[in-house]
Amino acid sequence: MSTTLIQLAYLVASVLFILGLRNLSSPRTASLGNQMAAMGMLIAIVATLLVQGVVDYPVVIAGLVVGSLIGAVAASRIQMTDMPQMVALLNGFGGAASVLVAGAEVSSRITAGELPTGIVPAAIVASALIGGLTLTGSLIAFAKLQEWMRGAPIQYPAQQYVNASIALVTLAACVALAMAPLDLQLFGILTALALLLGILLVIPIGGADMPVVIALLNSYSGLAACATGFVLDNSALVISGSLVGASGLILTKIMCDAMNRSLGNVLFGAFGAQSAVASVSADGSDQGTPTAYTPIDAAVIFSNARSVIVVPGYGMAVAQAQHAVRELTDTLAANGMEVNFAIHPVAGRMPGHMNVLLAEADVPYERLVEMDEINPQFPETDVVLVIGANDVVNPAAREDEGSPIYGMPVLEVDRAQHVFVIKRSMNPGFAGIQNPLFFKENTMMIFGDAKKVVIELNDAVKNY
Image (cartoon, rainbow, N blue to C red):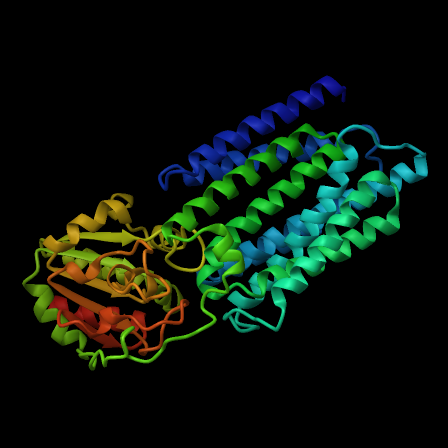
């Protein structure tokens, strides 16, 4: 296949990537966007296999088959509650691929005696640094999300000084490798330092900040791929990596804004290291005792409601209650109530987590309302049903200047006439702080598994 046709194929693939990303901006077109991006990736892979120099086709095809089988099995078996962990792993695999490909290219250039010039030495450095950091950082994020290690920030004496020292040594290794890009030993040293740095940078980050970390690591994987594209002189890889890198950074900024936090504070602030789990306010006063209700009690109030807003959170995901929630909202709508869903940008454990769960349950897209649009509606809402959400509905973000989350934009559910909160227990959320919403006069707690409670509530509403 001629070079012109290959470059044309890469151009078509790049256009499909861009259109796919554009369609992912709306739930209605997200499926089409995925299909377009997948088609673009297929075209890019086929074109790459036709490039002169790719000669070991049995090995390449074997890798494609094995990787495709593993991916298909993993994707079909993964629970929606575990999707953030899978995203973290995929980010890590992308970083690992960049390191391995860049290393293989350095090795082949050594064999050929071809000294890299121009931007290639810097691209080799970036592939090793960003790829290695992304791999171990993603694995740590996966371990925290999977609860294989504690989600709270892990700290030790002089941590910042240790990290800064290793960062300086890593920077020196970057400069050395850029000056001698065909030194495999230096490449290995830089990769090892990047792997260590990835671990040290993520362990101090608490579980409440995992959505931001996942978005940032996704960006890193794209930047690593982009750098590898320059190493290989592959335009499709450069374009696709740039798209992932840029979109990941934009999403990271959106996540930080949603929590009223700077990226530096997320990465270095060790948020959640101190837990305030007691039911006391910032000034130490007792907040009282939460009022517990049953689904039958709730059905009485729902029967007199005309407007209902449902606030989903990670507890809904854990209980896999999204289908039961849709059935309940269908029942409420059939009884003449206006039902909407309030979606906080960082609800769950990754960006868009709640949107994905509700889409899986066939909840109509028009019922999903973003935070800025839904907040003015709460004072006129009869009933709010909070299902497993915690930090994103915490009024301390508005009222308590001493709270760690003060200033964070939250869903203002406490302004509604009645608020029902479904939780397993009074344990705090990812932020590790208690929620004064649970103790307000208009809040009624329903303790139990979210799916079981919602099913019982649906039956009670039907039979009332």
